[in-house]
Image (cartoon, rainbow, N blue to C red):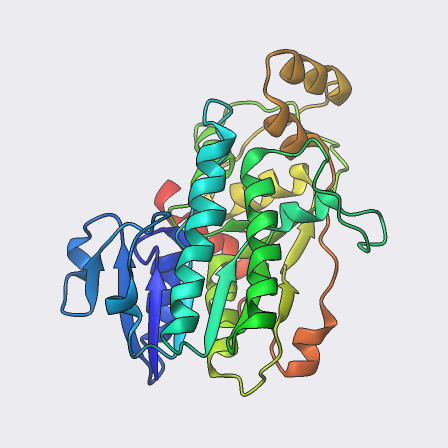
Length: 305
């Protein structure tokens, strides 16, 4: 079986390459960045863009795992750039994959799309004021599912929440750096609940779906823990053996100050709850996370010890 991975040198891509090296599949790698660790006859330095021709690299592939995308929301990035990178370029790539006879197309989306839904996760409304990256991913999902209905190609969409792991980026990395310095944090008693998932478990699920005989197109959600911000700080502290001091402070006041400073996503990440729905289909299919969240956190923050 030939598997093509885009974004192969990225955060999740490295975990997936490591996971698939344990299997018998032939891995073909694509990334816009040169990576000395991946240089081989199976690595192509290519950027997936709107109007590119990718028939050559897609020829002979059985499965495509599309990880390449524009991530980590920046308010200074125009919405059209997110749409171009995450939706239009993805759809162009998927259409060419279908025309080349690719049997299975796996797309990594985001659990933030559930912010478009009502409380029963039954209705989606793309007109809501949600960040441009999430909106572009939601549009890509709709286009891909429509393509699956028109083409003879299985489309699988994964919606992970915040992914943690070695070399994690964004707010989680900043938080780990603060914990390492033992800087006092006013986060004691924060009682929000948020879903997280370890990158190794995401890679394990992707491998499972690649090897699965199921031909169903659909959307899957996964998470391996639901914890508060206070518990997150505690988990990081234990993982890096750092005694980070936390204290009580009015969380509503901190949130208000952050929002006034334009740090809306940070305020939400620290104090708001965001739990993804449990996907029992994965259990019925026979998959379960092989790495506990405790092991995941220990593996994720070794570099901070």
